Image (tube, rainbow, N blue to C red; front, side, top):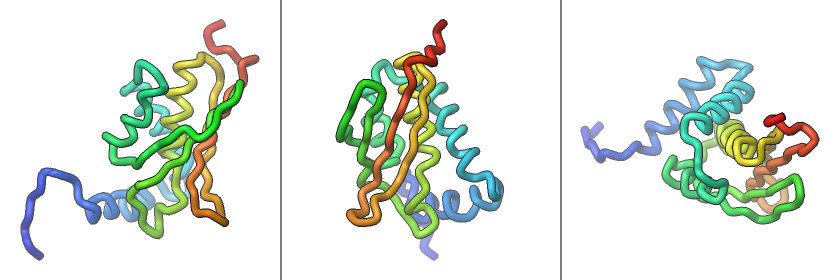
Length: 138
């Protein structure tokens, strides 16, 4: 194997961690722990506005995040251009936790995010939902 240093993480390095190391360490609780970890990352790296979240995704190497719809207590995003492998193609817990916490910080309401892949189109949708009756500032 050639010894090359690029200064950038490689796909192989990413897959080693995401597909083998993390699942072995976290076991059956992987999704729950990664969701919590995403929320913790959001607390340590808060954005000034949720409009900055797509740029964070890009800089973190998580893919391209685009807002596709929004309502009174909801926002849906589409996630594209992300590094995927067979083990991670339907794993969105880290990203979902991060989105949930950034929106919770911004709106002050209890917030959750659910990620899914549309079976027909293959699109990844991250659905952020909050409940204004559960205001955390009161």
